[in-house]
Image (cartoon, rainbow, N blue to C red; front, side, top):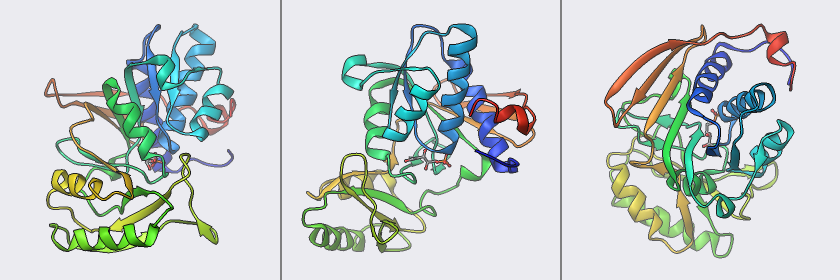
Length: 260
Ligand code: 5RP
């Protein structure tokens, strides 16, 4: 990675850095996917190397697994870990109830399995991810390649009766070919603009046989850590009902990139 960090990247760094303080030796930690989660993996790697922090990490994607190994974190499968103390991951949107849209990176299936097998899920985000209503970010659906067009037609039919503002479905591409997830599936991005009832929508689309999982995380996230570009951090704990403020130091770019 090269170059100047944008204010958003600095905000992501601040949130990720603060989230590393939730992790203690002996913990089994779910490691999220995306640019914010990558800063968290680097931060935990730094603690492993410099403080001797002993953790086992369960990555939520092949990309995160490679980065975690590179950073010196012991990587195990979810079945080896059995249950996790905490999962730390990014999000594409979060609302006041800490319900989320995830899957912008196409990893929401593993991310949801890992987060729901954890005592606690912590989301790390920049302020732009906070929304009054979920749905401006396209909702990813992981779908099986077999019968893709039939599945897509059933999804579009289901959307007709759901409380959403938009109903366009877009097959995610990777260049000229459909994007393929770590599980060998494709992703349909639903451009819904605003989701009136996320819980209902999640249940309805998951009933369609070709749909493996959607990117709505309802009642899964416990804590959100929101970073600002100047190093200020807000930590909201939905269960404790607390909001605390903190500050993390953002090193100069040269130091930030030194271990990457
Ligand atoms: C990947 C995800 C990511 O957490 C989400 O897309 C946020 O990514 P970033 O931290 O790069 O903004 O859900 O599937």
